[in-house]
Image (cartoon, rainbow, N blue to C red; front, side):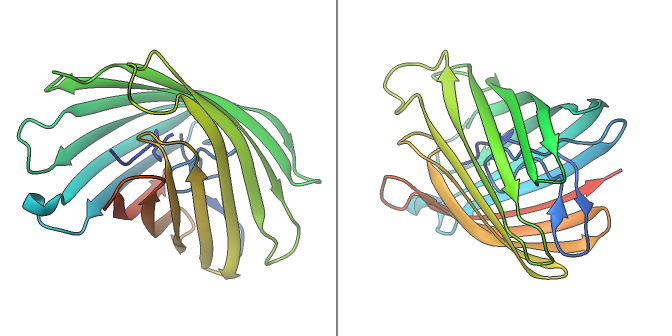
Length: 239
């Protein structure tokens, strides 16, 4: 299943969007991986994600709908929740609640370095049969280079806690890259290592819609499995 958000976020979804003239700052996921950003105190971020494998259901196609909301509850601390709905050929697909928390424990704007840690709980709230409850814990570090077109690189690791055996790797690496292309357009790609539900690479573009909103379009490609890929779209706004 796609979507690590807190994922996402894929982790993940966790989010705010605050813009400089060329670079989307402070969105707390890229596509799937958690960034080092957090929602500002007393701000609220709302997002809607759409993920689809572009074939008919009888050929393995599916759609995933993920509304998300995140609150900045204190300086450098955010909490949120995602709800994931899946539409596929098999009936009674699980509905999954994904509460999450993130703390930015280091930030040096002069050097462009930040670090954060957080966790996401994945628990089914409808059609629970055969679906386990487990957690994802992670830490990330990022480096942003100065200049109008300076990129940002993110790296880190994640581990899965309480997941049933036989569902793939129990952790791995987190990697992300963001490159401004234009005042309102950025190239974005992120990757979870591992052969599990989080193991995807997602390249795409982000578009600044306004000072408080952005639209992302990408394509997720699985680390394993035939036809393990999907279109990934999301729109988010900060209040």
